[in-house]
Image: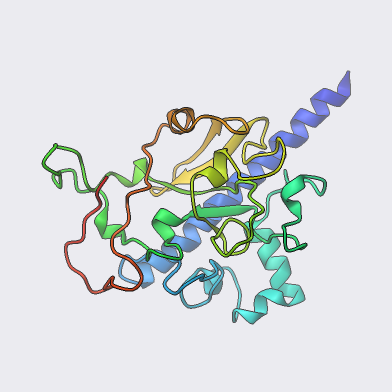
Length: 247
């Protein structure tokens, strides 16, 4: 009779620890934002690691260089920063198609951090309710409506698109409908996923493997961000003025 109760308590503890780590990732990200005129840490060059000490949050989590992430102390920092106690060794995604363990049990979404095609966003592009298109739709939503860091989706592609090795999710399907594997998803905290918004709100959302996209967004209480991208890496200027977000 005690075993289910003990399991529930242990699961709640792992979830609380996970939320704390997500909050710390958020705080480290905003230390970067404050130091870099509003730009978010992320993929400023093709396939930049989120622990990069120049473009990512590496210096804010205690890494001295990118190579330091592979040292014994660096691996400890990586596990503590991007890890999640709810991930078990026997979950199918724990080993990637490359045959190695992913450092990133927690990841940010590439529509804020950038991906292999698009560069990161700037904080100043958000929270402007008077910025609307011809349909009257807000082009610069409140940070409280924007998805940021979360439990990582269980994607094993390891194809250079962020799902496994870089610390950012390339697509939303990495979260609710991974391309391969069995029933394990990002909803590993008693069928809930921990996440934070761009305003720093730490929340949970229930879900299941291969859940419909509409249900995923309804459960989050947020709007899909797929089109919040401005310009490609090849033609986007970081010096642009007045850039806006569109749907």
